[in-house]
Amino acid sequence: MPLTPDRVNRQVLLNARPVGFPVDTDFKMVEALVPEPALGQLLIRTIYLSLDPYMRGRMDATASYAKPVQLGSVMEGGTVGEVVASKHDQFEEGELVLSANGWQEYAISDGQGIRKLDPSIAPVSTALGVLGMPGMTAYVGLLEVGELKVGDTVVVSAASGAVGAVVGQIAKIKGHRVVGVAGVQKKCTYVTDELGFDACVSHQSDTLAVDLAAVCPDGIDLYFENVGGKVFDAVLPLLNQFARVPICGRIANYNMTSPPEGPNGVPHLMGLILIRRLRLRGFIVWDHADSAAEFIREVGGWVRSGQLKYREDIVDGLGNAVTAFQGMLRGRNFGKLLVRVSDDKTR
Ligand SMILES: NC(=O)c1ccc[n+]([C@@H]2O[C@H](COP(=O)([O-])OP(=O)(O)OC[C@H]3O[C@@H](n4cnc5c(N)ncnc54)[C@H](OP(=O)(O)O)[C@@H]3O)[C@@H](O)[C@H]2O)c1
Image: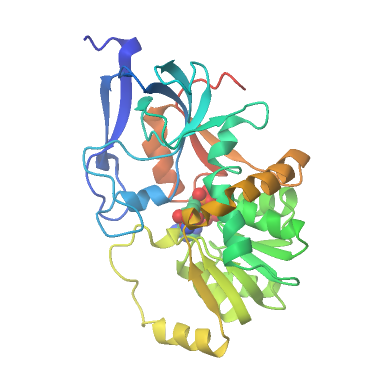
């Protein structure tokens, strides 16, 4: 069959495993034929592709909580798309769905693990952000893993991002003092002025530790960790007795090729964990799948009422996905990063 423009499925493949920061040649854009659905299958056109920090981990071969993407395979990723052909009795042409079709324009599915979306309830893009995986990560990480308690002072890093913005706003809705840590000043201003955090400090400042101490005069009871590195170093001395630290991510370390220079900080950390009875707990959102319905009900309600705001950073075209992904690992995204792969007719 000829590869005419209307039959081209552009795909981004993992071409090489990155050494440190991912470079352009670690990815490869190829053109394949748009596949035909067989009986029991549907063909989905990608509208939005979600770009998320976890994808950096999937590019490595090292053992993790999920299998790595194989070399030469399509990069994995959550997607919102439209059913454009269906030979499946539960899906019709024109329906909008949440699936995990990866970095490509079209994909075949047997319907497993797909959720239908109703654009009259919320913009379909939110299924990848505030009402999707990142929003649920914030919800379960703060309330279940972090066990948010009355009177807690909460600090969250990557505070303007997909997860951090939701963490801080939920804590504000529940009446807490909330401090964000973010990169550039415009992100800090957004976090305080638009999202209502009590304060926000920049991790780019040379005086981060002093700045953070100044806005946490009573110490920190719950630190929602998205970043690691020097932000964690600044937080650690401020943690109060019995503080909880849900370890959600450590993006500052994702491109590390060797351990950081300097003295080994583990003995000091172990000492503080013991003396202050700290509880550091890693978690993966899917361990908390039982909370999905409660999350949608509660956070969906706050989004609908305008109590909880969200911001999307939308990049147009699959051809810009690699640059956008690299930018996210350097803090260039401002809000939930999405690629608009094709037209969203619902907007
Ligand atoms: N455990 C789970 O199940 C789970 C699920 C989803 C996400 N996560 C984790 O949650 C974290 C946030 O994810 P997200 O989707 O909300 O991403 P995001 O915050 O929307 O985007 C990533 C942000 O990380 C910050 N960043 C990047 N490099 C950094 C560095 N070297 N030092 C400090 N900050 C840096 C940047 O913000 P600034 O410009 O403000 O620095 C960047 O905008 C990530 O670590 C991710 O891996 C975990």
